[in-house]
Image 1: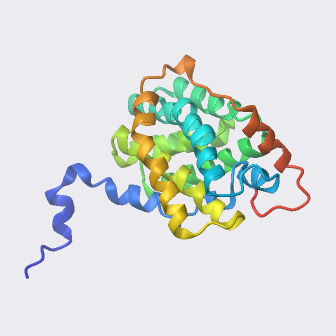
Image 2: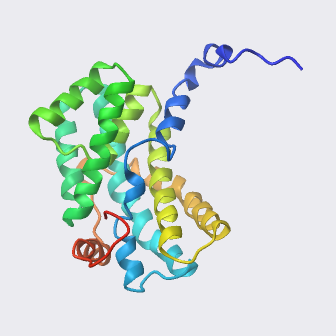
Amino acid sequence: MNLAPATDINSSHPATSWLWGMLQSGDSFYPTGSYAHSFGLESLVTEGVVHDVATLREFLSVAMLPMLESSDLPIVAHAWWAFHHGDWAAIERLCLLASALRPAQEARLASENIGRQRTELVARLYPDSVAAEFHRRVQAANWPACSAVAAALEASVMGAPLAAAMISYGYSNLAGLVAAAMKLMRIGQNSAQTLLHEALSQLPAAIECAQAVPEDEIGWSNPWLDIAQARHEHADARMFIS
């Protein structure tokens, strides 16, 4: 069997050279700190609202997928275009909007911390002027480098298409929540993977809808989740930061 040298992969398929970076950034080994957050799920488990496979499925369906479709994924899309066109005014607006869309302070800080760490890694790993300029503005002007904007920056710098940026962001959020659920409740790996598969099957439709959301219509609210996130800040004991 003759195997082509590994160096031929990029030269033969330059259009997919960004895939290496996306695989790296989507791995749990990538140090963004997202593994330490449940984004309100721990509070819902503690209160008995989410307690088994069926209620976890409902949580993903009525809370997380709608939030991705109406809020986070449209921000990824608009930020990706803004980075490509060097529209720093739009990027600033999107940073502020992404922060404002999380009413609970704990969830807001979680997104900003993850985004800030991702931004610092992008600037370190990819000597790109756009990444360096965004990192400078985050530091100098105290822009909230929320995770959705940082994900768009990452994909833009790598040369990844918009669809890949949105798929990667959606997957990492859904997989992260299912992984958190496995630590919080009695749910096996097979059930967890089944739920993740079901959620991911709905992601393409969410992405398609998200790409059509105008900037001035970005937003979504679920008081049920907002209250759970706010209560988590004052929990007597907790496993996750958020």
